[in-house]
Length: 301
Image: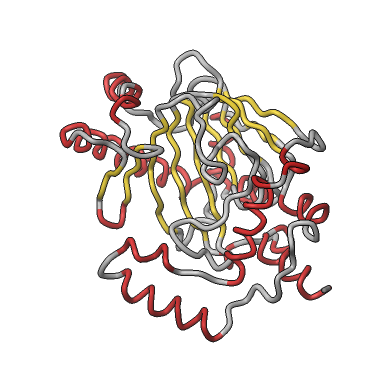
C-alpha cells in the first residue's frame, strides 16, 4: 500500500513527466516522501502553530482559499498570523503537485490548508467526526460528483510518528461490504433534480462560497452512506480483517486519494493537511475510481 519516493526519485519523475505518481494514487497507494519534498514553514512559525491547541474553537485550524478566511481560532492576531503561514504552505504544496502529478492536476479545486495541533489519540470526538475510526472520505466542501479527493500531509512533530491504520482500498471494501452497507442505491449519475440543485448552488456560491456545502448528488450520498457504515457498524469497526498500520516519521510527507483508501489516524500530533478536489475526467485508471465502482455495482443490481 505504501510507495516511498525519495527526493532524487521525485526529481526524475518530474523531469520525465511520467504518470508514476498519478497512477500510484489511482491504484490506491499512499505515496510517502521520507523527506518532505517542499520547504516547510520557518522554525518560529512551526513553534507558533504547535502552540495553538489551547486556542482552538473548532476541530482544526483551517485556511479557506475562496475567501482568504481562517477559522478555528479565537484570537484575532493568532488568526492573522496562522492565515499567512497556511496560505504560503498551500502555495508550496500546489506548486509541487502541479509538477509531480501533471496528469491529475489540471482543473483542480483548491481546498483548505489546515493545521492539526492536538494529539489524535483519545480526542473523544463524535463518531462521524473522529479521525481514529477507519473510513473513506465522502464529500469535500459539498458534492464532488465523483471528482477525486486528494490530501497532502506533513508530520511536523519533531519527535513523534504519526500512525495511521487502513483496511484496504475502496474497491476491496466495496466488494466485501456493499450489500451490508445498503449499496447500491441506484444510479450514481445525477438526475434532473440534482443537476438543477448543483446549478443553483454553483451560482449562489459565486457570491457566498460557503453555500457549496448545500450541493448534493447520488454519488456523494452513496459515499456518505458507506463512510457512515464504516464508522457506525461495530462488526466492521472492531474487525481486524485487512488491518495494517502505516507510520510517518517526523518531517515526512505523504499524499493519498482519501476517497479510495480507507484510513484512520491512531495517534500523532502536529500535522499540516492540504485538501484538493481533482476532476474525475483526469483519471487514467477509471476502473479504480469509486464513481465507476459504484456505477458498476448499480448496473449489476
